[in-house]
Amino acid sequence: MAKEKSAIFIIFGGSGDLAHRKLYPALYRLYKAGVLKDHFAVIGTARRPWSDDYFRETVVTSLENLDDDKQKMEEFAKHFFYQSHNVNDSKHYIALKELAAKLDDQFSAGHNRVYYMAIAPRFFGTVAEHINSEGLKTKNGFNRLVIEKPFGRDLASASELNNDLSKAFPEEEIYRIDHYLGKKMIQEIPNIRLKNPKFDKALSGKYVSNIQVTLGESLGVEDRGGYYETSGVLRDMVQNHIMQIIGSIAMDKPDEMTAESIHKVKTDLFSSLKVLDPEEVNRAFVRGQYDTDRLGKQTAYRDEENVDDNSNIETYAAGKIEFDDERWANVPFYVRSGKRMPDKSSRIDIVFNDQASKLGINPNTTVSLLIEPENGHSILVNGIDYQDSNQDLIKFPEDKTYFDDAREAYESLIIDILSGDRIHFTLWDELQSTWKYIDVIREQWDLETPKFPNYLSGTMGPEAADTLLERDGNSWVWDD
Ligand SMILES: NC(=O)c1ccc[n+]([C@@H]2O[C@H](COP(=O)([O-])OP(=O)(O)OC[C@H]3O[C@@H](n4cnc5c(N)ncnc54)[C@H](OP(=O)(O)O)[C@@H]3O)[C@@H](O)[C@H]2O)c1
Image (cartoon, rainbow, N blue to C red; front, side):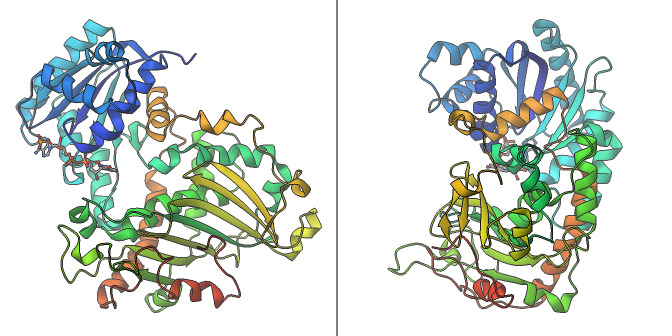
């Protein structure tokens, strides 16, 4: 049974989509698991003038697909309170502070506070500043600030945001969410490496031909066209999720399994990213935008709601990332992420080279770590499933329910926040390096007009993404 935690959560944007789709269901699961029990309360805050009762109804509605235990859901909802608030109004922070103190007494929450930014990124700095200046931070408990993505649009805006936040919260109180780091398979990678010394040893340029990271989605932008127009897949997926996945698989072995040691090796890896020269961008990176499908039935990106008819925003990106690092010298990390691909599939494919036979690994072996839609792994030799002969290369937990019973990403990340464990959050030093890398690509792309749309919905993306690997004598492992 998990240990009970205590805190008052203040959710800025408490009436919004993220709060209702992700946060309240995650908090409810933690309630059912006993991690949250008697000593917590949630203050939802946003401009609209909701009553506590109405807010609780919306919370219960957000749980309807999870459970049919109405009594439990209502019991849970009694921990929820609503405070109308405009982020720019100082008075409202005093009201929040008083309500939080009152609820802390009522629920004996140990003066612990979680400030969760489920609002538009342009408000992150203002809210943090007011939390500090209006004295919301408590002296005798913890104060943790949770920041959603996106963390900036480029290095300059990310630095500005970070400066604003750091005036109000020291780095160790800031929890930057990258929900991929909450996914079970990603969290398992350091353990898999630790428990499989041969596999860990083989993770180096000596034995690896290339590593591929794919975050493919079958859906289009759905109702998020407006957001996507300001972002594109490079900022939305590559700068954060893909980079963090590379970090998990390619970082050096940490001295200890602590947040400090793990972030040190990750930061070292990212600081060795080989930043492209502008003239290298179009050789190393490919962008795409989806059209309708072969039958003309699906909506092309440019015809989606809130999307410009001539939009040049990319819904697909693929690239070759390299590191100036002894361990990974000359090993390409091929990455791609796209919307309207044939299936949803998040995976890491590690392709070993001939030298791997020195470690007893069969020639042409590929180890695939599957993140979504299902957790798991496969080992292919010459494209054929060859798991049995490679048993000593990588062993997974034998208990089949190990992954099935895993906590959902937000649930796991909220436990980490309540426990003060920062392993699965991104640090500013890491972000600085990844933004620096991405900025060159973005700036170059913004100078040129792409020929969009350039791939049909339901396909693997533009042909140029295949050429990218073929030029090096390689090919994508996951293919339609
Ligand atoms: N939705 C997702 O799946 C998702 C995934 C990853 C990251 N995120 C990030 O999470 C954050 C929230 O996204 P969302 O999709 O939940 O947005 P949303 O549905 O638009 O919610 C925004 C919230 O902010 C409140 N708000 C807006 N202006 C305000 C103001 N001036 N003062 C106080 N509250 C204000 C809104 O309520 P009122 O209108 O009543 O004020 C609402 O509760 C964003 O940073 C987004 O990038 C979202």
